[in-house]
Amino acid sequence: MVVINRPKSVAINAPRMCQPIGAIWATLGIHGSVPLIHGSQGCSTYPRNLMTRHFREPIEVAITSLHEKATIFGGAINLKLALSNIIARQHPELITVITTCLSETTGDDIYGIIKAFKSENNEHTKIVGIHTPSYVGTHVIGYDNAIKALVTQLADPKTAPNGKVNIIPGMVNPGDVLEIKHILTEMGIPGLYLTDISQTLNAPLRLPKPHFPRGGTTIQEIADCPNSLGTIPLCKTEGQGAANYLQEKYGVAAKFGDLPIGVESTETFIANLTALTGKNMPESLIDERDLLVDAIVDSSQITFGTKVAVFGDPDIVQGITRFVYELGMQPIHVMTTLEGGQFAQNMQTLATMYGAEAEKQNIIVGGDLYDLHQKIKETRVDLIIGDSKGKYISKDEGIPLIRVGFPQSDRFGYQRKSMVGFRGSLQLLDTLVNTIMDAKEP
Ligand code: SF4
Image 1 (cartoon, rainbow, N blue to C red):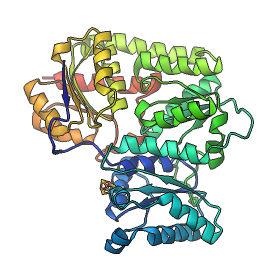
Image 2: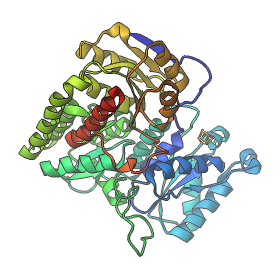
Image 3: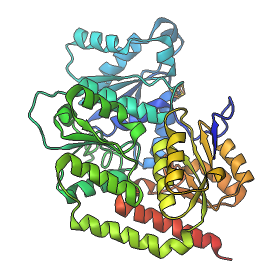
Image 4: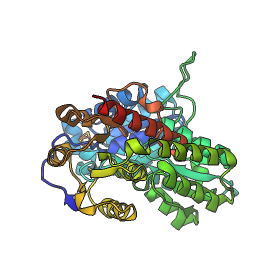
C-alpha cells in the first residue's frame, strides 16, 4: 500500500471546490434563506454555475460585490447595503453571511458588522456569520463550518426534549436525503435535518411559484436541535463540528459511522438510530436489506475481482470503497483532494478488514486528477467512480466512469438518484453491474 500525500505544489484538474460552496449548500437547505457571499463577483457566479447544472434548479446567491475600494478600506458598507437590499426585496427568514478568500484576507469583522447593522436599523431578521476562508480546506470543510455556525448561533435549548434525532446529511443528493427520511419513517423515528435540501433543491413545478421553495429545515427546528436524542452526521467530515459541539455543550449524543452505502454501513446507521431511540430495524427494512444481499450474491460472478479507481469527497470515497469491497471488487486507486484528516488511515483499516492485497493499493491524499490519471496509466483499472470531472480520464483511457458525488454538470436527473440506504445501494449496484457487463461485451 502506497500513501501519497499532496504529490505536487500545483493542481491540475482538481476535483475540489471552495469553502463557500459548502456553506451555500447548507444554507439552501433552510426554508426562506438567502446565502450572501461577502467577496468579489466571481465567488458567487462560480458556485451558482456548478450548482445550477447539478441540481437543475435556479440557485439564488447574493453577493456584496467587493471591488478595489472595499478591499482597501474594508467591506462594511457593501455588507450593510447588501443586507438592507435583501431584507427589503426578499423578506427572508434567514441570511447567512459567507466569507471568501478576499474578505478573510482583508480581515472584515463580519460579526461586528452584522451586530452594528442590526442595532442601527432595529432589524430582527436572523443573520448568521459563517467563516469560509477558501485558501484552506475545500467545500466539505465549508459545509462543516456552516452547519456548526448555524447550530452555534441559532440553537436554543430552552424548550422540552423533542424525541427527534438530528441528521446532518452532508453534501449528498436530494434523492439521498429522501432515502434517509424513508429509513427513519419506516422505523417510526422523527428526524430533524441539519439541513434539508430534499425539496428546496429538487422542487416540484407548481404555479403560482412560491416566493421561496417549499420544504427545507425551519429556523425553529434548528433552534430545537439541542433538545434531540442525538446527532448522526452521515458524512463525518461534513458534520462532526456541529455534532461534537452539540454533544459537548448540550449533552446531545453524537453517533458516527461511514456514509451508509452498502450492507454493513447501512446496518451501522440503523444500529446508531436504535441506540439513540430504542427502536429496532422493522421487517420492511430487513426485506430491503435482504434484497440487496440477494443482488450482491446474484452479481458476484460479474463484480468479483473488478479493479476500480475511486475519487471525490473523503466520506463518499470511504463509503463507496467499503461497498466495492463488499462486492468483492479491488479498489486499486483511492483519492481525495482534502489534505490531512483520517482518510489514509481509514483506507488502510478497510483494506486490512477486507483482506485486500495491501501492496497493490495507492492512497492519494490531497491529490488531483492528473495524479490519479498517472496512477491509472501505471496500473489500469476496469472502472472509475467519481464526479463528472473524471470523464477526461475515462475518455482518454477508454474506462467507464460511474458517476457519484458533486458536481455532475453534464448529466440530467442525477440529483434525484440515491446511493445510500439499502435501496440506494441497490440502485448503485445495478449501475455498476450493468456497466461492467457493457464493458465486457465484445
Ligand atoms: S476567490 Fe476564494 S472564495 Fe472566491 S471563488 Fe475563488 S477560491 Fe472561492
